[in-house]
Length: 421
Image 1: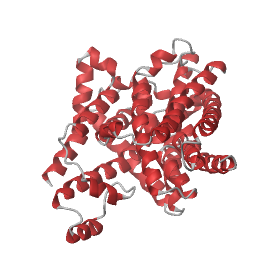
Image 2 (image 1 turned 180 degrees about the horizontal axis):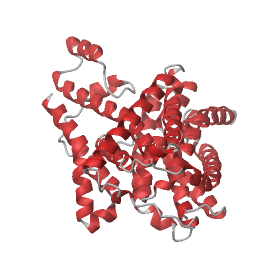
Image 3 (image 1 turned 120 degrees about the vertical axis):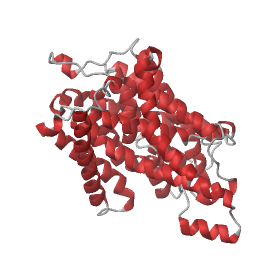
Image 4 (image 1 turned 30 degrees about the horizontal axis):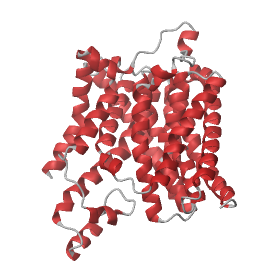
């Protein structure tokens, strides 16, 4: 229990040290708090500080993040698992719980302070970018399928799963795998390779992508600047004032509203099938968060955004600490890995080219790629790395639409390609 308590304290309070460091160091400020959180998280998860699961336990998980207590106790009684697996299972459960609550609580907080009316200036660009992303994905998947189908059994199913990866991340991947009756072993392999490629993809997006693409694409033009209003502050400048008396009072109010929104959205999600619950939760918290931003008293809560960003730092630290870099050295099925990597990076290359052709700006292109590839929860993370909170709603809208349409597109394309096997 001591390890779990220490881990909770670390996840909750270490982001404060990161914020302090970025305010004191110009170099660290340039790197950004979110990127630093990822770096620290990856280090924590891969230097052997945290107890690791046995191979036997990994095989028993079957896609679950952790084993329920009853199941765990049964395996311990049978001798299938040992006492050494108890703490890693508890850590996995803690990580799953924190992942489940941080982003749904953060999204309303981030939306409260935004001006939705001005966002409408950006909506057209975001929707065009989303269509370009879907077109890019379809082109790459078809090319990859015909190039690699001779080397990959059931390549048509893999093609459908890759659509899920780029239109909603792991939730859509799992939904399409279920619809296509993909074997558990194939699902685990594709999911592992997606995590490996996705890690490098995310690092690229959050570090050098913006400066690289700005060299030949249109830089983001703020809707605020177009109306000669005060520009949006960089995310790392937003933490100022959080610990003042008025700031703490604002945070309590904003956090209470966010909990209420999360509870309502969660309650509504229970009325739909389990496969659609994530979509309903994201739609619910986004809708209520946007509605809250239209209420002047809520919109004026200045500390709602920095509190939301602090939760994003917790999420970033958490997710990064779960990354297993040993997967990089365990690529047993090269052609399958190649297909996954082509789906991720090939789609990005064509998407960027089409965005340049259609004159879509850099930040909108990056947030669209992120929303489609990593799902809505990662939108605020990338927006923070780009230091541009105006694109958050665009990213959430694109990501949510990806959730909704991705499964249909993946299953449809898979069955279309099955005719060519």
